[in-house]
Length: 101
Ligand SMILES: [Zn+2]
Ligand SMILES: [Zn+2]
Image 1 (cartoon, helix red, strand yellow):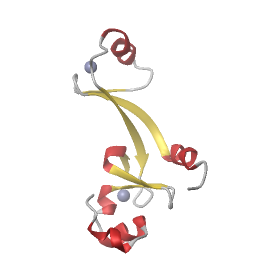
Image 2: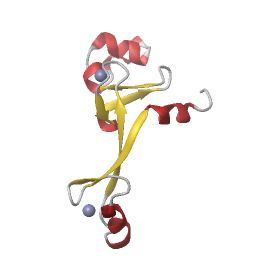
Image 3: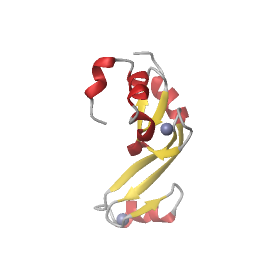
Image 4: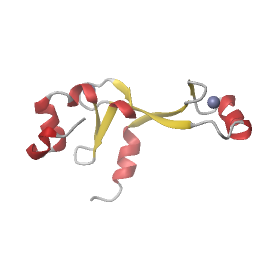
């Protein structure tokens, strides 16, 4: 694997936000709610959410709705990956055809 692909991947990330599963709310970096959670609510489950742009259709999606390909160095949204032809192009291996996404 090529070195620095994590750096390359980071460049594809537009933004990072947090989602609290207990409060059911989104916390943006710099938000006082994040501080409050770190200080007073350590048992709340904060999930890191990456905001990425789909390299195929250009839609802005969260990382749970996208897959990253180190070969293409791109995130693609699940919408694009649900297309079989796209799917093959993305993963580059026809044997992965029956892979669940
Ligand atoms: Zn919370
Ligand atoms: Zn897409």
